Image 1 (cartoon, one colour):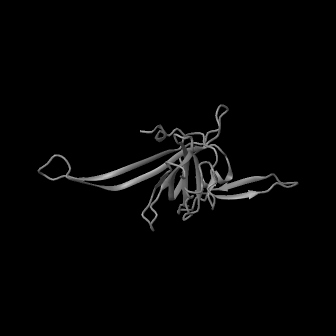
Image 2 (image 1 turned 60 degrees about the vertical axis):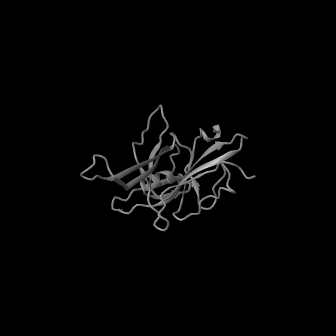
Image 3 (image 1 turned 90 degrees about the vertical axis):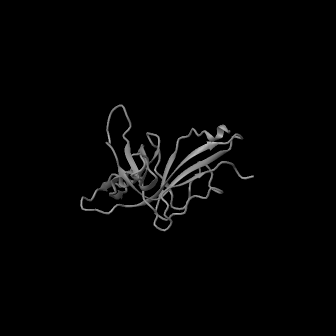
Length: 195
């Protein structure tokens, strides 16, 4: 048994267009930029949690009191956190709104504007990933990454302005199935560096 299998780590959250290649575990080390179109959502005010809720159908027969067969009929996979950075991009993603950025000028303040369309029924989808770090017994920093290749993000709580707390954006990322692979969640748990 190795204590390096006990992970104590904050995590960062990344997003990219659906279909973006995952960062290569052989060349993208822990804490490095993921490359491609992957962008970080910045700091978080809370830990990032993964939940997986499963609904099952149990078949019982008349002659027994316990099920003889069970199958999974629904699974919800979600990542939850509170984003610390109050940016136009984070607000756009959390509200599924439209972002407009205005550059500062002599008579114009720099600003971002996010508009939420009350008539929009479709949901924007992205790839999301989180990265934590494990430390090997030889002190190598190794990435632990979770990926949702196709998912939606929603604002999932109150955005609170207060004198004693940072203004956070509570979000829930809900995984959807990638129809080409049937995948909803992939976990890369790097356990040892190159030899």
